[in-house]
Length: 340
Image 1: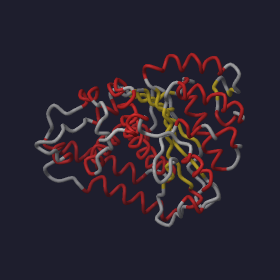
Image 2 (image 1 turned 120 degrees about the horizontal axis):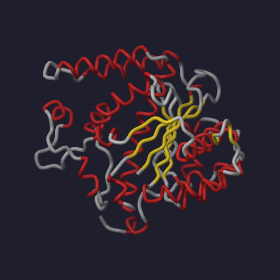
Image 3 (image 1 turned 180 degrees about the vertical axis):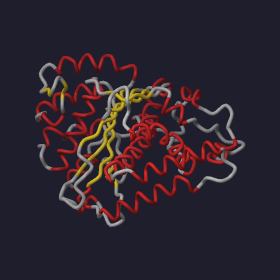
Image 4 (image 1 turned 45 degrees about the vertical axis):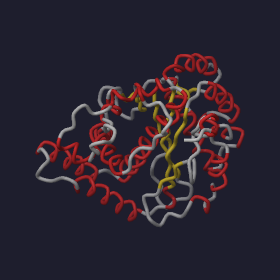
């Protein structure tokens, strides 16, 4: 499967109304990618561009609506993680940043290799020195990747098991293609062990009757003492998954106007505009049909401050609920009826 990731919003505006920013991911089955790009290419001729690139912020409701049947036909998944900084305080976010940084080194002991200890402490110091903007982005993309892995594998293991044999990550680059930004370097270095540790504590969801056979190549053949401490595998349990390989075997940052990046930009911008009330339902009401329904809300609205209220009490609460009502089921119709 191919995962295209882009962001929208400035990740600033603490305390200001409707300061919504989000990061979106479009998951495209490898078997459908070429066909999707051809069909999108036909539509792209009629879409507004900026410096040769289609930009979601420039698209009308009708433009966006024309894309949705193409995406549904190609069995894609759209995921999004969002934050409303208008509900946050700077103190609350800084406390969250400090707690996340401290958690990075909490598990280190003298049993770990010194090179690993040095690398983790270096990553911690970098996170502690990040601007609030970069800290917020790192927290959101961490949650998004976690959700993409869980939903992507659970959905396609029932419909297209071969898609679990490879994960191709393409992230919209903010720096030069050949020179990643410091944040991009930190993300590629630390997100792998951090997610591995998180999923050891809170295992990724799976479907008992799903076909995960094509993911076997990502299982650890041998586990180092360090990873054994993190994963704590059961002697009679399944082999742990090497998330480092899943996340890094095919990963690149791109500034090119690739079809996948343009489409995820369109979807992410439209979702943000929907929450902000600047896009009419005609432009966003079909987006949930390519999203996986998840309780309590299909749109993942994150809080980095303990005082943030629930989304249903917010101006866009009804829109959040509308997205949830029309999202598609994780299970196939056959599996919904099956006894398992």
